[in-house]
Image (tube, one colour):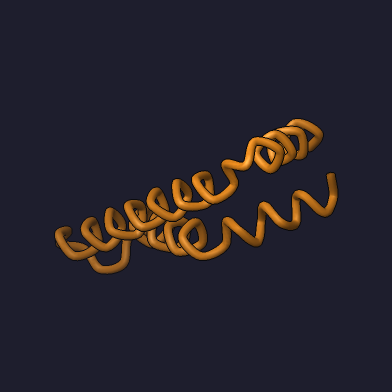
Length: 75
């Protein structure tokens, strides 16, 4: 846990917080699109891998700034 807090502190000190947040958002959008693509282009119904990719993508696209702010509070 200390390593995560140290990494969040380095990001906050380097003023690259906005770039890191947007990087997480882009990765989240790509994960969600990959999950939707897997779900639509497979012959089975709801598969576990696409569902996990969609949920992880939505979380990464919506929550990174809040997570960084919470990590800064605990640092």
